[in-house]
Amino acid sequence: MSVTTERHLNGVDTTTLFATIDAVRQHPEAAQFQFRARNDWVSGTHSRGRFPGFFGAGAEHVHATDTVVDADHPAVLVGQDNGPTPAELLLNALASCLMAGLGNIAAARGVELHGVRCDVEGDIDLRGILGIDDTVRNGFSAIRVRFSVDGEAEAEQLASLVGQSVRRSAVYDVLTNGTTVSVDVA
Amino acid sequence: MSVTTERHLNGVDTTTLFATIDAVRQHPEAAQFQFRARNDWVSGTHSRGRFPGFFGAGAEHVHATDTVVDADHPAVLVGQDNGPTPAELLLNALASCLMAGLGNIAAARGVELHGVRCDVEGDIDLRGILGIDDTVRNGFSAIRVRFSVDGEAEAEQLASLVGQSVRRSAVYDVLTNGTTVSVDVA
Image (cartoon, rainbow over all chains, first blue to last red; front, side, top):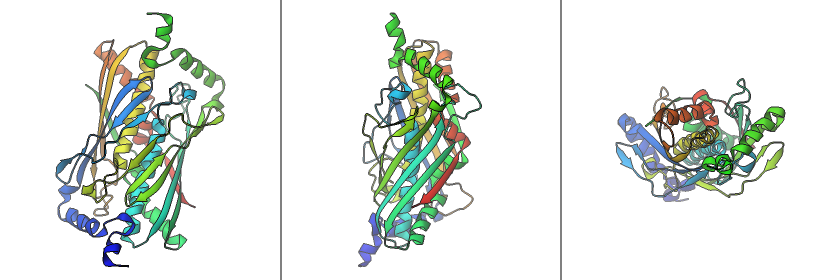
């Protein structure tokens, strides 16, 4: 394996990754990011999400890819099913965060990945959001994540990639520990 | 305004909505839902999310719409920017949940909506996930939501729609209060 290949293991430019971490260590202000999302109501429970850009490393950025995510409630919840539910989008955010971390960590540790799959499921009693029982919480009572990792390492080492990803996941942190959310109306 | 129009105000079939809530009140087991997401690693920090279906109202369901959400890190974070970041997808999940609730609540209260926009921003110090400073949390330190609601009601009444949506939002609950997340490796 050439040096160039090693530096881009699993599609990760580890040379630049390590250089970026070193740069941020020297300039902590570069680590201050603000992420954003915009959502427009379409009809009923159907809405359309976009990602207008973010601030980070001292500058404003726009994404190279224009992503639109439609969300809706399904027919069984009196929606038109024009997209996944917000609850499913939350599970997807968690899965993609753990997956991105795993990709970076595997490359940093020199573990070649062949494929990774992540299944997430969340239990929810809808009597909360339907206003039927105030003792029932609105959100998920429990979320379970199941990873299947295929790569050039022992099972224990592959599992430790997942463990480290969990320890460094932004979305996992918010979902397990919560954060402050303010809501204003213009 | 005809009765038919009233029943479908803002694209919400309120007759069926109220009937569904009554039915769940009589049969609490119908309120037990399990939502799911599946994510496959593509390369580096790039992954692809799908929504294979859900359990609820005593049966399995698949969505009418096939949604694929690509997620990635941007170039400034050493990714290929093939989609929004997982952190932005989390903000989008929150916005879409509050929006779906607002659509239902406005219809239930007989408030005609012309348009609703929701902007969400979240502050994050990436020294957490980069492993530079263990005193910095991985996730958002704060999330701010800003609604702009245009509809046939006084500003105070429009604002109260947002307030009620927050009180009945599954995603808002999880983001502010946290929940249990288990992670397993097959």
